Length: 382
Image (cartoon, rainbow, N blue to C red; front, top):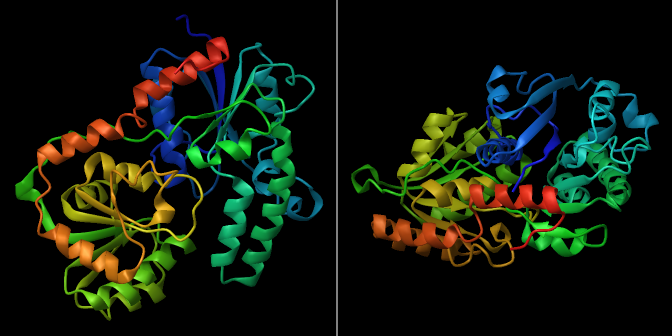
């Protein structure tokens, strides 16, 4: 198949892929390039996030960067979601108009020009990472700051209205299978699972396996902090087994709470290398969420390189992961399953068996080819 050039607009600089939302963005770019895509790449950068980097040039025919400028007045004056209105950049529009190539909007944040009169008739594709307004409403539930809670609620309402901009796009590519029905009212919707680091080997080094349970995630996110507190308050007291909680920027309150448990070690902001080693070598990965939105990239990472995995039902996506992991919801069930699995070595044979089933949905090369097929002919055949 001849691969046409096309534009991708990213909401952030996707390297290094050091937080959940950007992992799919980076490995999608890398995988598309690997299967022959000719990409004109556009991405925003802003304070506190990844700066422009020459490393991305190897994956792109052309690359453009745009500063996302802080515009707090738009929180009050604009009817658009702030994550969208703060990415209004006329240079982006000018670069999109240099040719008539298809445009791939990678996330709702990138869609400021989605229906601009000059590109409305172009082939436009949208990557749905979440049902964003649902995600923001859920974030508001966890937020303890009154001001941040109000912002999240306002942003959620604006995102719900703005979502109608998706009407008439060529296709929507949903990260989560469970979101397909929602997005199908706007356009043809396909399940294209998230892209992730698939370079890990299937060989398990049983000598490196550590008899411990790992929970990991960005601990500055209220949802993850809540899950960590659930483990500390409900799970850890029922078991003497070693539990590791690892992640970015834990609060002082979480650090203090962890100190109350002799069998719990909290590792604050580990390096990517340290986190990879923890995921790979811990006998059990315990992954919990109390907010069922999208796919958790940390689950894919654990499936690719970890050993035994316990999840709760809100980590699942339409039953896809139930056959790959152990599903437990109550603290007592989690503890019983932990202790059972800690006594069972995770062998290379088990890993190969899981990899085979995992690859039926989650293969970077396969899904990159599906995206190219969709852009080239407008439909995915399989």
